[in-house]
Structures are given as structure tokens and as C-alpha cells.
Image (cartoon, rainbow, N blue to C red; front, side, top):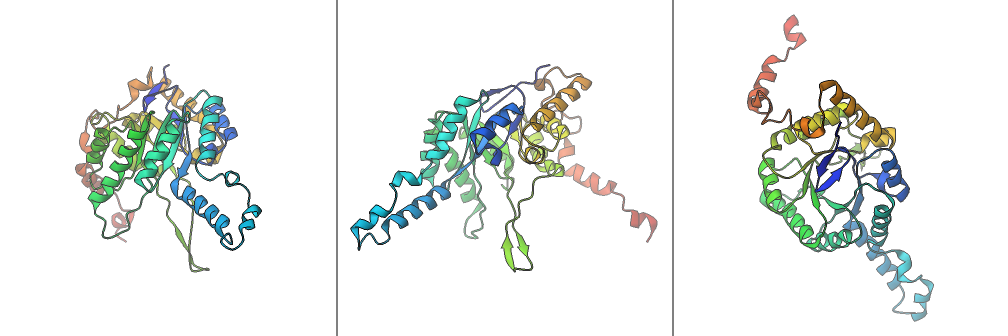
Length: 337
């Protein structure tokens, strides 16, 4: 049985990829993910804001009092001791690429055009097999148009592609007014892969403290529906490899994403819940299902339930929405109470 697949120009032994998470924030963690069976690892994100904050903090420390007492500078360690800049991240990428045999994909999140370009160049020279652009951006400014938001994504991709010598993928939002059209524009701009979708973490309210509280909730299996639908509709319509993320809790979600047309299936929540070795369980579950159904390869099953290949393509469209509403049985209405 051939479980191999190809994503972002990278040959993978199977489709299950460990997506960006704290598990990939150390060399030991990356090795454990490889040992656990991941076909590739996406590293935790390098955030430009964090680098800017580090630089600003060091500049403040080394400047305070220096205008009055020149000898005050001697109380501070050398600037290199503060590890300002992306050096630690680049070093981890380099060491990981040398230590493991699976692809190591760097993850980059920036806020300026220069950041996308400069850091993409550094990452591509560090030994990373590819770069995933994590465009985590919420357009809350009422004066910012949808067109301007779309251009922000395109500018990030264009800048990173021009500066990189390795494949560049893009983790996109589900909130574009025309997802399929934007996918085609990303393809034209040179994207080597699209990840559907970025999962925006939502804050909660603390009613006792009357404060906004960060609340990290791991994804659940039912969250598969949105990316599953769009991957099924995009498969065969664009040439960019597609990676699925969100909601992968067990082999069924891996299988569904592949049937929709995904080239790779990424997971974080399941690995945080069960540990890196759970990758192997996902792959084994996939292989067992394929054997029962008579599939000889992942390539054979990929896209079997995409919109272009199902018997009823309207299952993904408005007609099915109407049928679902008509077919739902309300027990209270049926009982007359």
C-alpha cells in the first residue's frame, strides 16, 4: 500500500503532518514528532512583533541613564547576550533540519512588508524545507475595505516568494468574500501550497474580574466541516496543493479530508491531547480503512468525494442547504406540543 503524497513540492511518506504548536518549539520536541510518525513538522511561528518588542526592550535598557553616566553602560551585558532578532529560531531550524529526516517547515507571521521579505529570506537560507506564511490578521478597522485585506495577503505572499529559495505555502482565512477566487489569485501569485484554514482564537469575558480573558480551546472533530467543504470544492479547480487543518481528532477526519481532496492533513490538538506518538495511530487507522475499502494508494482515494467527482455536486451548494432544512425533524413539532 502506497501512503505517500506530495505537498508544497515535498515528498511525504504519508499525509499526516504535525502543524505548528508548542511541540515543535524545541529540538527534542521535533525529534519526538518524527519518532511519533509525523511525515513533516511545521514549526511554531516566528512573530515579527515579538522580535520588535525584544529590540525595543534592549534599546530601552541600554539607553536608560546613559546620557548622564557613561560608565552605566558597563552594568549591562553585551548586546549579543540578549539574543535580539530571529537568531534562536534560525538556529533551531538549522539544527532540526540536520537532526531529522523529515521535512521541517518554518512558520512565519509578520506585520510589515519588510518583515515578510527579510525573515523569509533568512528562513529559506537556514535549512528549512519550506515556509508557511501564517497570516493571522483580523481586519477590525471599519475604514479598511475587503479589497485592501485581500491585497495584504497577496503582498505578504509576493514578498516572501521573491525572497525565498524554498517553497512557500500560505495559511489562509475562511472569511474572504470569494474564497475560490482568492485561492486562484494565490496560485497566480506563486503559492506552493494553501492551508485551509487559519483558526482564529477567540477571547472570552471574565465576569468576576470584568476583563477580557484569553481562552485557548483545542479544536474538536465537528470543526472539520468548513475546511472539508472548501477543500472538496477547490480540488481539481486549482493547481495548488491543499493542506487541511482543524478538527483532526482521529483517523476518520484524516480519511474525510483526503476524500475531499487534501494533499496533506495537519493536526495539533490531537497531538497535544494524546502525545506525538498519536501520529502513528492516525496513519495506521488510515491504512486499515484503505485496506478495507480496497484502495492501493492515497493518490487513488484523494478527491473521491470532491465536488467534481461526487454523483450529486449540489450536495456542497445551496440546493443541499434547502434539502437539509426541509428534512430536519423537530420532535416538538411532530408531537404537537
